[in-house]
Length: 598
Image: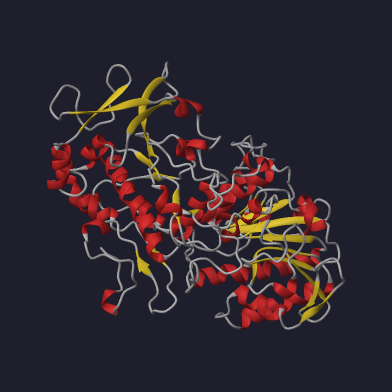
């Protein structure tokens, strides 16, 4: 009877209970009960907001030589007992005037240690990134840093947290900055101006973007190259070395990435910084990173010596080193290749490049890696969690060649289960813990054969959520009357994160399917006696909600990019691919076809 109901009912809400019941998607359900702390005037603690976990037999592919798992975070970076941030002002103290926060040699001198200062900057939209950046350094025992505030709101917020902050005088908006936007380019110019301001003070400068995280104290590594004028990270995805030495400069074909780079206050470095600034201020169409690369490559070679890995660059006097991308990681070498793990190295940093879905995609990647610092309420949301482990046949992961077709077959199989979990999370008003997502081929923004030649990408691999889903679309607020209630999500690793309260991990309840209309049988978060949550196989509610739900989740999938022999080369993922018998993973054939499936 159950299978007949599936065959004759509507595709999603009307079948999710039966699908769970017959074990096609989920074989068992569990509910976690989170202990919520009482308000200040409450006298006792209470159990509420149960967290649902859907579990299933899981394919153990980690033992296969053909698959790898995204690496765990080094112990240094997972120490969640953050050291107190210094100089937290008393709340009864008056906010000092803005003049107090001007960038001066005195201010820098107060923070310098061993003649080096670490600097990042941003606006209020990146407040949580900045707090993560600061707290990671604190945990690593590094205190010689400063944060530049591009708006007054950020400056005040950081001051009251005791974080050493200076005013950049940018008068910038507090909104998010889209990559490539005029404001984005303005931020790049502010970086160059900042470098030119600090170098004359005579201190070494480690300049960082806010969308990177420190995993290990980098200062001893940088100090091991005392001859270098500039050490820069890069977008190199093919390793030129297999240890922690600098990249072999002759073999680096990718751009130097200015999200992490170290400057010494030498005459050559100051000359480079000055010319770079003048170039950018003279032409606002030049991207700061391109300008840096153009100037540095004006002359490249010969090597400074036989051993250091440094190269003469720019004017023939500047001694340049390229930090190894295996340990000063990009978003590709860390999240996709897991290069440092394969080479048995300890990473110093990860920079969220090579990613999609905007700032939300960056946050989600760092959360998946358990190196992003969220407030306590993030780990114990109202309504609780729902999580599940999808069942994936071994053949979908490992059999046959890794092609576009086999990749989409694997992803679509997972997407259908995720769609069901989203539906249940919506009905129960719970936060869905997204499952680990397996891919067989890489995603980039240009044509490629599946994985980059020479890279260490192993197939299949656990791919970041933004490889398949538009994380920003999943988190975007949409009108409920048109798209139904929002469905909050969390990263797949959250239940393993040491920051997660132990009471959330330990507290769970069984879920039982029941006949709609019987006692205590209704779709809600209320638990019944004996630690059981009863869940109806069918209800009228999902009939009313399904159309809005479909409209919402159709916007969640993104694209895969890109095929080698067709323009456009991207292929749209489709949340409801299984409802289209003729669906195939091919790029749009005409311009009229080039649009999302919704």
